Image (tube, rainbow, N blue to C red; front, side):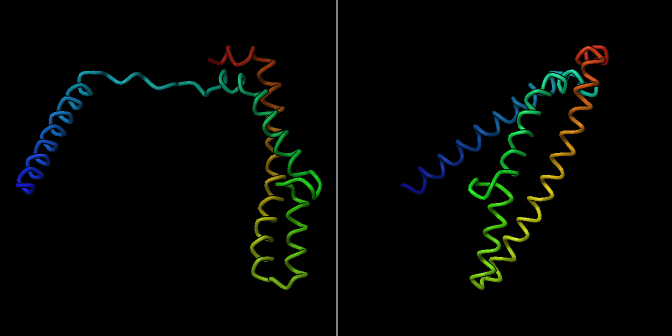
Length: 133
């Protein structure tokens, strides 16, 4: 008897899913999609410049901090040195790869900071992007 009850429950579930799928497809066919944004997002980007600047600044501050700060390049360098001294070559290799990435991240963030300053200037000169739309 339990086998039949499980089959009936399964069939009822399939039927309910089919009904829901049919009504969802019909409802989706009735509505026309709204047109997407056609601009370059200048207004939104100009609005976010202060937040982006703070975020990049915090990341650079953390990366440039001393060996006592988690997430800093100096701390990771110290870990690489400790692994080499202990003779853990595999660990040192792994950490060295992370260190190389972290150093490239500093370079990348400094470039983004310069680009963001150019965006800030553009936004100031163009009315916070309102002229461009």
